[in-house]
Length: 179
Image (cartoon, rainbow, N blue to C red; front, side, top):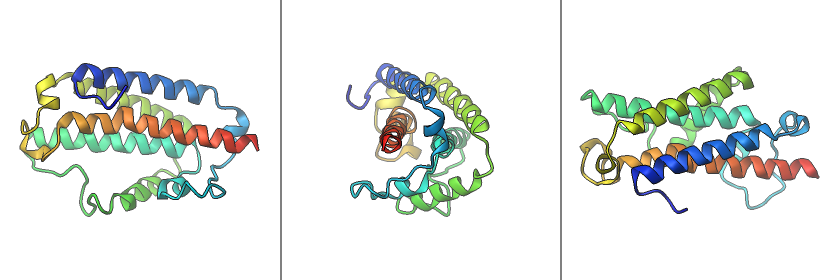
């Protein structure tokens, strides 16, 4: 399925990818869980996140923190507080630095806590998505604070697309562990 453009497709994709990711996580071996991520041998994996995240906890915390961005952004703007999606001092050009700060913030978070936070925040995002109509999510111009995009595109990015990113990363790690 392509990128969701309706509420139904968005929710279906988010739930489906969430379940697929959780299945993939449940199938990780002890070796895969205990081996640090190392993608340095692959010339194609040059984006910063390939070097940033070292384990499953780091991935789950990344997803959790992006859920928090979405939840806080929507809540603030619905309450009349005009806030950007990416909080200051960051912006869309420097959000990589923000991701590093999320990573640093959670280096003492346990894997069990990361799983809990990720699961709880996913549920909150899905509950929030249900409060909007299809038009509110996928029509441009409904909310001034969304800018030139749609609110639904932010939900897709924070859920289904991000879960897909996480699955690709975990599958690449699994391949590395076979060597």
